[in-house]
Image 1 (spheres, rainbow, N blue to C red):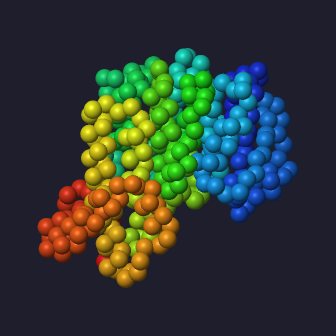
Image 2: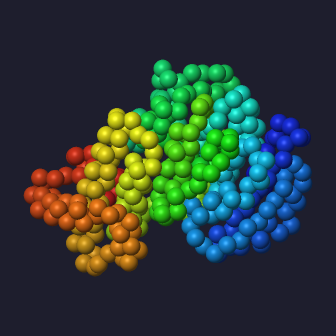
Amino acid sequence: MTALLRQKLPSDALRVDIIVVDDGSPVPARKELEGLTIAPPFCLRLIEQPNAGVATARNTALAAVAADTTYIAFLDSDDIWDPDHLATGLDALGRGYDFYFCDGRRINDADTIFTNSAAAPPFKDFLSDPNVRSIGDQLYEMDPAPLFSQSLLRAGFAIPTVVYRRAVAPSLLFDTSLREVGEDSLFLLELILECRKVCCSSRELVLFADGVNIFASKYTWDDPGHLMKYFGTLLYYEKLRKTCRLSAQDAAFVESLVQRYHRVFAFLSVRYFLKKRELWPRKLVELTRNDPRFWLWYPALALYVSLTYPLGLYDPFKSGDIYRPSVVAS
């Protein structure tokens, strides 16, 4: 919160409405905000609700946005904005862009979002694409369609790095069925498809701290959370191809990802059962019920993995389905 209040805003005429949603936090936000001085142009509103998940919490905030609001930005409780973040975003949007994002870094990581090359070319390579144009001040203009396609391979943005024009998609909400992963990516990709002009800054203006992050948490292979993360990603891709207008090329790529995650989940679930000798946790079983095609693909793939992996006929690492971590539990 203090980092937000240190934002270097471009004009005294601005009003910045801060909407804090306490989604049943074990550390009440009301106590965290005690003694904090909120002075113009900042206004603070606290909304407290029973825990319902991050998508519902963000939807609550969106529903509370004032009707005359021009721009919207999100900030998770464990992330920190550079003092220039909002000013840079507002300057970009003031040039006629609908969607702006910047680079950021997770604390203690050497790479930023733009420079991370794990398992794919880094996003910074996209800034040299013919569809991307430098407009000065470390800002880059790009068309929405190429950015959308690039983001299926390697997204260059995360929720706290984005500022967007509300009028582009005033009724767009987060998908509350995506409880594990992907609700933010789906929202941003849907938003991009509604935009006319988008841009980004190569400046590193957001720091992602060490709070709870379901996707980035270091689940070990023997943790059921590892299975839920992969299945949640599968549900995200299924939802993506149903929700977004995909080109033939993008649709084929998403289908290949769905097939890959089918194989990954089958492999990891068989491995989990053989190692743990226990049934799946109830939460994972409930998650599989969100895929109406589950019993059409899973039994055959689970049998395939069970028969071929011990014989060396299927290797998820050599096939590229899974990228080998530095340490793998035996």
